Image 1 (cartoon, rainbow, N blue to C red):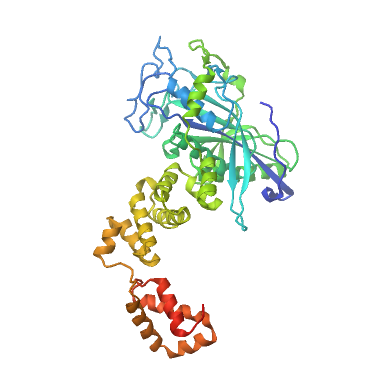
Image 2 (cartoon, rainbow, N blue to C red):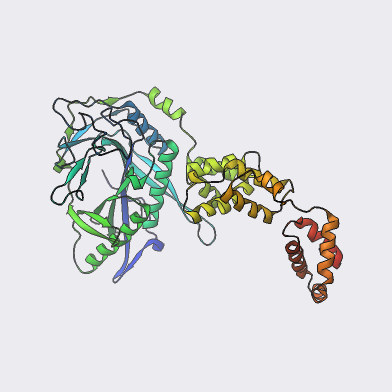
Length: 500
C-alpha cells in the first residue's frame, strides 16, 4: 500500500528527547475472531474452553484429500463489520495461501487474503478527552482493509519437561484482520482506537472482543521520526492482548527507538514481543516481507463473489452503532457528550441505561447509572452483565424519588440495600420505614427544637443568611434524612425570617 501522511504534526503529542522532539507513528493490525458456531472452512465447533484437540475436523488437521468449504456466516460477519467501519465492500475477493512452517500450522500454509480482500478502505472516529475545559478531540483513523483468514493452533511448551504439545482447537477458526493506516500519533490514540474498534464489533455481534480469551489481539507497528520528516523504520510488536499493554508497549518501543537514533544508530525492521512483567519489548525475529510467504491464489477455493442485494440485506439489519447512539442520547435526552460517551462505551451499558431511562428523565437516569451503578460495580470488580441491580429495580428507585416517597439521601441508602440484598425497592421502603416525612407539623416541631437549642447560630444567620443551610442539615439529621428537604428549607427560612 502507498502510505500517506494525513496528520499535521501536533506539538502536544511530541516526545522530548535528548536532542530535540520526536513524533511516534502507530498503525495496528487487529485480529478479531469471527463470532460463528463453526470454523471458516470446516464444520468444527469454535466453542472456547473445550479440551485440547476436541474441536478439530479432518480439514483442520490437514488430512490428505480434505478440501475447505467456505462458511457463509463468516462472510456475512466480515461484511457486517466492514459496513460498521464505513468501509468499501468488495463484492469479489480471493483467498490466497500464505506459506510458512510452524508446528501448530498443520497445512504448512495459512489460507488468507492478500491483494483482493473482502473489505477495503474505511474509517473509525476516536474521541480523546475530556480536557480541562470538558472538551473532546475527535480524530479520524483510516482503515486500510479487512480480510478473512484462518487462525493457527496453539503450541504449549509448559506441559512436559522435554517436549512441546500442539492444541489444534483454534486451527481454522475464522479471523478478521483489520488493518489501520499509520494515522495514530500517541499511545492514548492507539488505546482509544482499540477500545472503539472493540466496541463496534461487539455492537455488531461480529466478535465478542474477549481479549483475555484471545478473541481479539493486536500487532502494533511503531516507528519514530523528527516532526514533519518522512516515516521511519517500523517495528512490529506481535500479539498484544490488552488495551493497557498496547499503551505500555508503544511507550517503551518509542523510547527505545529514540534512544538508538539519538546515539547515532539505525532501527532494524523486526518483529518484537512485549513482556508485560518487565514492561518492555524484546526482539523475536527479523520482519518478513510479503515475498517471503510466497502468496498465491488457493487452488481449492473459487473467488468469493456476491451482489449488491446480499450487502443491502445485511446493511438493513445492522444495529445502531456507538456514534449514532451517542448523538441520539445528546440530542433527544439532553445528556452531556461525556455522559453519553460513557453510556455507549459498551452495548450492555447502553442497553441497561435505555431500559432505566424509558419513560423517565434521561439526565436523572444517566446520573444513577454512571455515578451509582457503574461506580458500585467498579468497586466490586464486576461488569454490567454481573450487576445485582436490575434496570427495573433502579427505575423503581428513581420513581420513588419523583413521587416524593423518599428523599435523595434515602434513595442512596435504598440503592445500597438493593445492591447487597436485592428485593423490591417499594417493599423495602414500606417494610423498613424509609418513607419521607411530609407531615409539615412533624417537620415544624423538629425545626422549632433545633432553633431553640442553638441561639448562637440564630444570631449568625441574621448577619449571614446563607448560614440557614446549617439548620436545614441539623433538621435532616434529626429526622434521619426522612424529612422532605424542600419543606425543611421553607420552614427554616420562615422561622428565621429569611426572605425568599
